[in-house]
Length: 621
Ligand code: AMP
Image (cartoon, rainbow, N blue to C red; front, top):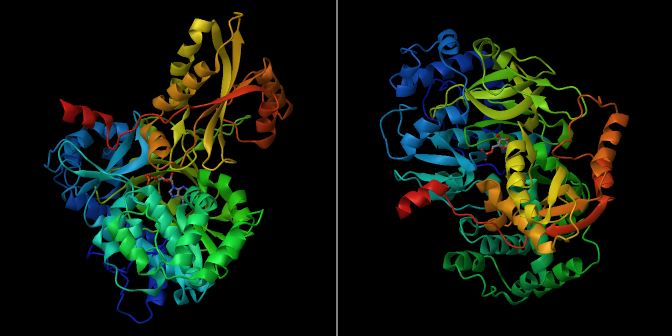
């Protein structure tokens, strides 16, 4: 994640802990800030909670639960329930529908941030307030001072980051609803950032803010290639996005070279502001064009990043969580450049940063910054057995609500689900991420990201859980009924060997009739599954093109018995064995692939519209 302009945080309960951006040694000042807030973590957490609760003492939600203006931790923990999105849905709907009374937060809700986590198939809507932008900017401003300790001199060149905006919608009440990064890139904090050697990117703002994803990617790559010698670091938010850019280059390098050779921009780039911005950088450079062409026409693309951008020191992308599936591809394209995961954040709140950015991806831990929100932790326990599923209670009883521990009280090695209370009106909200304590920076814990609760499949920012997958499969198998065929067993796999990656379903069928099932029926099954998956998945297919067509592979009869035999041979209990609904382990994927009889792809994209489905229906009515 690239860093952001240096903006002072608003005066608040944490005002003793500020970064003075006018100090000449601003990097040192940022490191001192980290030192201070991690040393005084508990004191700050207490003050953050008190500040959030006193500012919002009069809001309906806190009054409903009888907090009565109290701001201490003990009363808060006794009175306030630990909640999920579904518990807040009706309050959030009221805000979305235009109720401006203080329901969740004492300050006006400025917009909704649409999470990649979904509820009932639609993106969750996270309320936010204007000042949260400052908190996000503060976290960004810590990244380069940390990085500078390990890789000095990054201020002498540029960062080539592929950054994109996504479509936005308006709620029926008129609030903008968009992803957090879209909100950030469109903000004045980003657009009007003062010159800073650390926020010197190869992509002009206009190319990042271009709503057409082809033009945005094309122009960002063109600018990155033109300035190839100046690039010292490359990246995108998630690994999947960076790989998509390399894939785009594989497809379009000859057009890009043509532009560099002639100094004229491809007429497919029609956005006037993008054209102007690119033409400020693009100059005829036949020598560079020849060089790029000779590199891109080589048979293997191994090391293409270090060949085209020879001064690159690292790749800045998130490869923790499900993104770890992309590590081998990134290693291949970069000849093993360091993969740097700098921060951990969400639409609900930005959480923390990696203080040891050159560590290996499997060692990454994030230090939560105590000024960002009030954090609590719900202990979770791994199920024993063949599948390493994580057992997290759905709704908590009173005793479990008391089990939550504070930031400074988590135990080394223990896994927890993250629960946040934010300045923007979430109280004891379960984020859905499972974290493991890997160590401490002073008093503040450092967490490995373990997983997102319940997610079985993910290619990009999509997160599909077992229940959604089951419902989608159930819809699809209706197509088999006229052929006297039924589904005996199934499992799934996120195949990232293709670019973009795609979902694969392995189906074992019982087919008694002699009437063959035409391929079009299985294609219909693929499409029905895609239509039934959540809107983040469908957006990835339709708009972002970050997910490829879903594939069904029909496997031989008896394949799932073989899968069970394999699991039992590795120690699974025969009584407790359940078919895993998603597989990741390479030998199992190989076993399944060795028994495939036929395979089918979704013939077209599923339907998707920006915003919530029900908002469009309301508009039409
Ligand atoms: P969103 O609400 O769409 O912004 O997604 C936020 C979620 O993305 C988090 O709750 C995590 O599940 C995931 N995420 C964000 N940052 C990281 C990271 N550094 N490593 C792993 N997962 C992350």
